[in-house]
Structures are given as structure tokens and as C-alpha cells.
Amino acid sequence: MKKFVLQVSLFILPVIIFYMFPLFVIVSSREYYSGGDVVAAQEKNNDALFLYAYNTDPHYAYKNALVEKKAPKIIVFGTSRAMQIRKEFFAQPEDFVNAAGSGTSLWDIGDHIKSLPKNDTPSLVILGLDREMFLQPPQLQTFNNPMPSWEKIFYLTTENARQIYADFYHKKFSIHDLTSRPTENVGLAAIANKSGFRYDGSLDTGKLLDTASRRAWLQADFISNLANTDFYNYPMTDDQKNTVSQNIAALENILQLSKEKGIKVIAYLSPCTTAYYSIMDLEGGPNVFSDNVSYDRYFVSDNFLSADLTKIFANYNASIFNITDIKKITASDNEFFDFAHGSDKLFLKAVIYMAKNSSVLKPYVDPQNLNEMLKNQQGDYLNF
Image: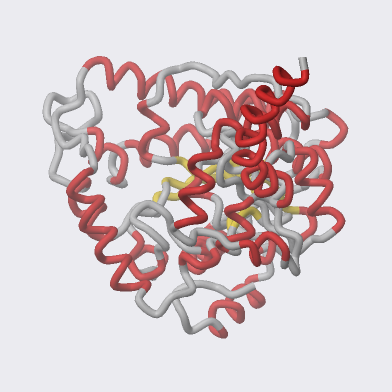
């Protein structure tokens, strides 16, 4: 019996030793935290950032918990391209939450607005509308229920052990990162890269912007992505037209739900880099259902989707802006932080532009403060 126990111990001991370091990484980085746990940690320390490295739980749980906790009067919905809109852009910063990522399709956003409590609804919703949104199938995302903490720790440790060792070997993080956390960031990506979601729900890109070679890297990223992007620069198919129509109906449903709840709505078509916009804005036909117009041109041109949505929004006393062409907001390609995502400085310019031209947004901002903020920042991004 003793011999058997010894043999088992000799077998188990190397396994335990192998998993001890990954377990330390997962626990000390709080990589296993649920969305609600993260919000509680940020409530204690408002400067804490949050971003997972190995935990693949969707951000919707965190964003939903943030909305529930803060009950904001201003909410942003959209994809990752809307995550640079920050609380500092608004006259009452603490009334703001960027919930972009809590639902990335128009169907998800509509479902989210429908579920907002009647006694705690926001007064303004800002919608970031992306190129891909109108080609998504009409369905809601489904998510699994979160695991208990102990189960999540076990799962993340065993599933990611080899990757954790590899990342440590390649110096993507250090022991010092895990033992010295002045802002108590949550999640290994937030700790190692000093980037992640702020307590207002917006995304701080941290090290990605903090480099002298950033502009050179940015140009390389533009070139690489332009070569690998699937452009819809061919005549729209019947399936595409049908999907677009269904998503426009979903957007109108958002406007109707918002009207019923007394929520004002402002939306924008997401900004594109200059080269990206130029490729998409090819000459097309006279309307969306012609034989020769492409979806890309339909999305970026003032004459197609923008014109159609302007008419729909007017019926609900809502505003929509087509800022796919960044010249409209006097922005530049250097004010993107990668091929697809504009920086907070670009979106500050977008908010200034929209507030100037919208009676819906104007009461929620301080134009003088925004212009002063822009004037005082000489770089390509803001530094809050």
C-alpha cells in the first residue's frame, strides 16, 4: 500500500508542480473574475482597468453589470469601434457608461434597450453603426451562464497552462507585473499592458499608443489590413439586400423602443481611414436596389444608407450622422489606433461635430470645454 501511495505521489507531484505557476498567474491577476466582480473592484478603485488575457468570457457580462450598477443617463451601444467615447466628453461625466460590446448586432442592442428597467432608463442612447452590422443575420447572441469562481480558476489554469508558460518565456508579462499593481488592474492583459476598460466602460489602449514608432506601425497596419480585408465592391446580391432590409427594420425597432421609454437617440456611421473610405466609395448606381451599386458604397455614401436612415430617424425626432469620411470631422489617419479603430481624440472631434449639428446631443455636452480639451491636446490621442 505504501509503495502504491509513493508511486501515485511521484506521478502526481510533477503535475502539481507544473500547474502551480499557471494557477498563481490566474489567481493573482484575477483573470477568473466575473463581470460583476470586476465592476465591484473598479468601484473600490475607479482608476483600475480591466481586460482578460486568457478568459474568453464575452465583455457583455461586464458591460451589463456596469450599466446595472451605475444606472447611467447616457449610454453608448455598438461594437469595439465605439469604445473610445469617454465620460470626459459630457457635461455630467458620472452619468455616462460606454456599453459598446454588450451587444454588437442591432438585434442585441434592441433586446438590451427592451430589458432596461422602466424606472432607471437612460435619457440618451448613442449608437455606433458599423459596416458589418447591416449584413449580420437577424438573430440574438446566446451566452453560457458563468462558472463559479473555483471552477473558472480550475478551467483557466488547466486549459491555458502551456500558453501561460509560453507567454512568460516570451516576456509578455513578468512576475513583477503580478506582484506590483499600483492601480489594482483586473485581468492579465490590463496588468501587463496597462490597457483595458475604464470604470466608464470606455477602452484605454495603453501601451498600444505609448510608443515613438506608433505612426510607422500604424501605416504598416493599414497596408496589411487593406490587403486582407474582404471588400463588398461588387453589385449587391438579393441575399445582401434582404439582410440589409431586415437590419434597417431592427434599427427602426430600436428607435420605437427608445421612443416608448422616453429615450433620445443619436447615431453615427463609423469613421473609416482615408484609404479604406476611398476603396469603399466607388461609383455606384442610383439606389440600393439597382443592379450595379455595391454594399460598400451603399454604406459610406451620403446618397444611400445615410439618406435612407436620415428619413427614418426624422420620424422619431432622432439624429444620425455619416462620419465615414473623417474629413467631415477634421480628423486624420494618425488619429486611429489601428486600421479599424479611431482614437479618443478622433471621437472627441466626432462628438464636437455632432453636438454642433444636433439639438439631441447638444444639451449633454459643454462645447467650450470640449474645444478647450481638443486645443490643449497636440498629439494623436488624449491623455486622461
